[in-house]
Length: 402
Ligand SMILES: Nc1nc2c(ncn2[C@@H]2O[C@H](COP(=O)(O)OP(=O)(O)O)[C@@H](O)[C@H]2O)c(=O)[nH]1
Ligand SMILES: [Mg+2]
Image (cartoon, rainbow, N blue to C red):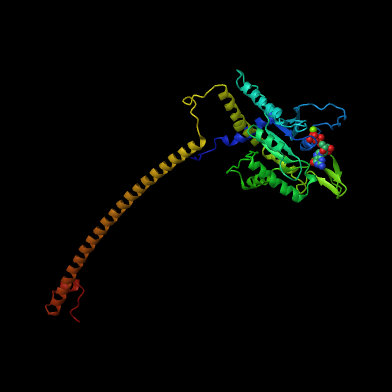
């Protein structure tokens, strides 16, 4: 039920308070990148934040012993833009898919994600919860090899294992190696595979109170998934003397920040400009919450339903709506009966005055008739030649001389 205020109260200023608080505390976001070696993960992260988060890698010596497991490396940087601070953590997973047998490549990554949930859960159970550190992974960019065919078993396995624990955002790596048509066909094939395997990739919620522009923008961003991306931290000069980030080929420069060349801009827009909070919220409210419930019930902790009566917001809204409707209906019937009574009263009054008028009319008519008869009588008497007394005739204005 929406109530209108009679005057200014001040809570229209809430968004400003939230704004001030957020700017003061800063923002924090953790993103994971997963994909086989050499797909451009490190390059993309550098491109995304326009900084050298990762130093240029020196290729390992041929004799160098390769690590036998997937490593998890995390780098945190503070980035500032217009006075707003963002603490960005990128979790890289070198070694994923690099082995002869990649069957369990997903395992160390899942373990890492869950141990971050555990750490958060442990903090929640502490006596002092004032200093909570949120190291949970808010988004996972999964790099798909630009084969132009379909998802590989490794891709399907990883996504199937991880989709209930993290916001999966699939991206087509090195999209400059595919033609425009190949990208379109590959995207369709990837989405079909994802659907076939019942994999839940990140889906942005739509809000009915968003303005049309925002809805259209979100739809546009979502329609690009899986994002076909090109990464580069090198700049080149293009015609017109502009310097752009891109990759140079004998036939031209592919521009990272040009939406006609790749979906990099859309990916950045979604991750940073439009959906960062959304991704964090979904991680906290759905992914983490499910993990927590599973974990606690596995430990034999059960919720007493009589103590925590869960409130279903949809049901509650429905109840409120019903109550509101009933109230409206009641008000309507009341108003109708009042109206009816008023009309009846008015009608009654009208009828009464009509009768009165009619009675008066009758009375006056009778008086008039009576006078007419009298006059008639007098006239007849006159004509019959019965003279009147002079005084009387003068009074009446008659003249005998005539
Ligand atoms: N064609 C192409 N090459 C890329 C792209 N991004 C990175 N590379 C190159 O791929 C190689 C591996 O990149 P790197 O970021 O180290 O990959 P990582 O192992 O996934 O971190 C480097 O030589 C990059 O220059 C891209 O979008 N297109
Ligand atoms: Mg790397």
